[in-house]
Length: 359
Image (cartoon, rainbow, N blue to C red; front, side, top):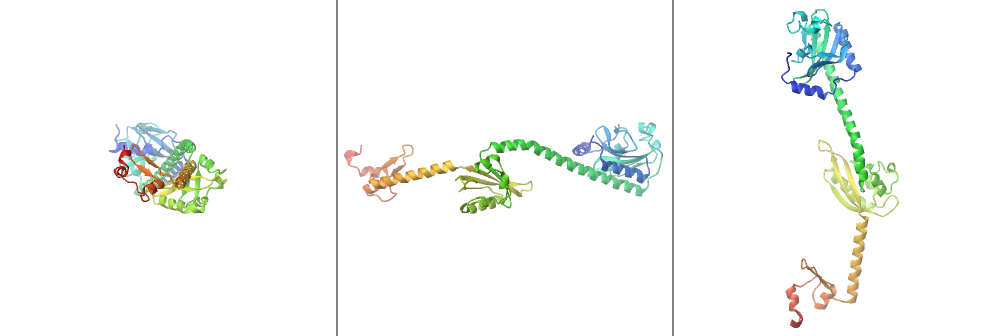
């Protein structure tokens, strides 16, 4: 049985996170293995990754197989420490003299391996050089092999970063249809506003609500400039509030691109990154024109009723039977001699009635 590092589970996790096992050959890894073969004058140079029960060669020079069992791998011993492992003659080393790679093809005699160190105690594989004849390996050569191993480590980290980026792009592409359907299902006008106030996105229904034929017509425009001058101070104030990390809300009038008058209920919310910094703003504008016009019509009707009552001189009152709240018209207060906005208590009012009329 071969020895295992004490942190074998963590080591395997680090290896799998690299997403490099069983990937096709890559020129930069092959170039390092060729360089190692030429630098040390050996026929075989390998970039070896140690999996759970196998070693797999990411790059190989002078060897046709893709890997071996972990039990037969010299590199199994290399990943036990941060030091370069040197075996000058495998036939005299009790760990390897009965190894099938020594007794059979390729007939290993000399081996030198530098671990690929991804973090403290985390060694995922090796850069190793092999010869079929015994030989020595100087201290300077050990340093050179360790330096080349650091190059491989850097390439592995670069590959990992690329794999993460590709995964994020793939995930984003998967989310895009869903997000688009959500945005397009909303009847609100949804916009992305950059911190400088420029407009960089508007959903399809928002374009329709604003009667904008093509988003390119407004892309990059200053959002506040698209509002009437009397509303711009509200828009700018909302942008500044959101940039400070808080949601802002206001209602204002803004006609469409074709001049249709509309009133909007607007929220502006910050979008933050993992560090909590505001990177952009999301604005949602809801068309409240119908509600606004209805409230205006109601206010006008109430004003007409008030004027009509004042003109007739009639005294009118109403009472809410659920709450007991009472309202008197100005005419009724004048008739009974009460001041403006004065509504007497029920008992006081009853006292003023003739006793025969109180029932």
